[in-house]
Length: 168
Image (cartoon, rainbow, N blue to C red; front, side, top):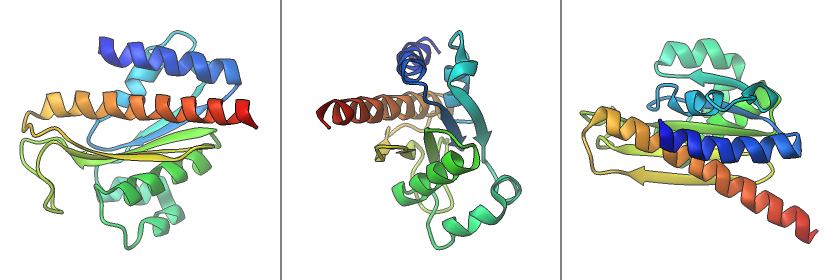
């Protein structure tokens, strides 16, 4: 958790300084991305909401009509996770959002991805995606690595957005 909190603290400091916010739509991380951010003192100034979308019924209930945007996209892919992030950003009216979908293990997912596979995305003024393959079948290790990578990806997007606004 310490590694998550270190990155989450940096991310939270940036978001707070800019007056920006973040929402999370995670699956295989099981809420760890949200937990890392919420563990930062003063998180209410930048953290809007987090959803753990782990089953089909959860997607349908939480996303409602917005789930149609996912139609035709295979889960655990960058396009799917990016659309999740876009939906979360819109639904919760946040500046930024993280979308995550993967296979924590110990086995792969129904799409044929091996354990240790995650597709991560950030939607906001800058959009970024990443596919992570840990090569591990250890469920807990994968969950922590996915969450850390998601926060790292958000930090990279924040840095890019900050540098582009300085140039403009």
